Length: 377
Image (cartoon, rainbow, N blue to C red):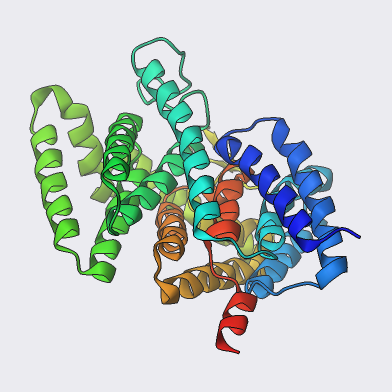
């Protein structure tokens, strides 16, 4: 008979192999997902299914996607994308069957950070012209900009969270070093969504922890940003910051039109038009295949059921991990907060490359309903 400890051991080995590649599109991910699924089936047969506490949101979200596929012009394409998203979402369920100790969680975080170092290296290589980019002067390390910046935002959220807890000196040095490079790279991307996301996470952390260190960090960051924006050579970044609140900015006005189009699409079909079927063409003839807003895009593509499921899922993740408030649960909380804020201006959650990082972190580090029930009994 296969023991539960055997199943956990090999699940962890696979996750450790997976962790450095969560911020990538590596082919090895496909093989590991299916091996994890096989181990999960054996685990459920042996001990029964353990509730994670996120099932209601996941199921409703799935139903919304399936319903949208029936009204899609590209049903096969929707099914293919759904299968990729499903693999990422299953990480919550698969990893949610196990309890992980502090050492196991720390190893996972260290391995994830090695994946970030690769991303930062690629971004800096692009900055110095050693790697050809896709967005001109805005670096993206060869990835879609909104995927690349979301990955780094998630890491920054986690690193900031860890800095609000007592750490060893070497950990402070590593976290501050990688955090500094990450913020430098995020500035180079010129992603306004990322800047707002990181600012939001830092303010929320200060409110939660009521930390003088956090207030000092925010103050020093403000001085640094203001000093940077006042340099004549950085007029480009100054204009990007000013454009955030300007409705006259062409990018912002186009986004408003895209939001209106998404809502009108939903009004015509309350079940949605199918995953990744959003398509808007503006007056200039430019076509956009995402709504620059997760909530509008989910509403138009997955309908009322889909957006309801998504909001319930996000609400459960944020609520459950906020009320525990240890460093690992807060990492999950702030990581998803960064995505929730980012999602008002882009569509990161639609990409499995983003989902796999978030949901693996939730499964390893986050709240599980069955663990709480054991603690209370």
